[in-house]
Every structure is written in C-alpha cells, then in structure tokens.
Image 1 (cartoon, rainbow, N blue to C red):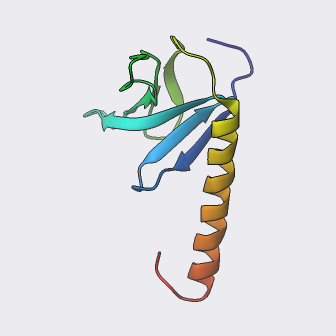
Image 2 (tube, one colour):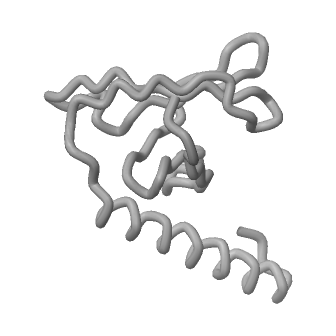
Length: 103
C-alpha cells in the first residue's frame, strides 16, 4: 500500500457512499458483507478497463484492505470537481436543515 494515502468519503446522487483516494481515484459502494464491512470498487470497474482496484472498510470506516490495481490513468480534475460537489451538497443540506426542512 502507498504511503500517505488521503481518503475522503462522500455521497453520490443516489445516496450511496463514494470514496476518493488522493483526489485521483473514485470508488463507489458495491456491496456489504455479513460482517458489516463494505466493499467499494473503482468507478472504472464496469468500463472497458475492468479495473480490479477495491477498498474494504469495516463498520467504523477504517480501511481493512486497499488493492491499488488500477489499469487506467488517474482523473484528478474530475475527482476534484466531485469533491467540491460533495462539499456544496453538504452545505445545502445543513442550510435546509437549519430552516426545518427535511433533506
């Protein structure tokens, strides 16, 4: 595993969690095991690249396993936009909740 890995956990439009590694690679929630650990796969998993990279988090959102097997180029610009979008969505939710609306 790489040294100094920066992990950000956000949310995609359908309400599922998304993990961003070093502002370069995105991982979407795939499934949850019986032991409550969650499997996240690289967003390039279902493309022609068939990327095999994955992350396993326990129920406390600690990384149990990170397989960095990327077979594609990183997308720093796209991921940075995604990070900004998540932060904006969180601010909007806070504002709506402060007015008594449910999000």
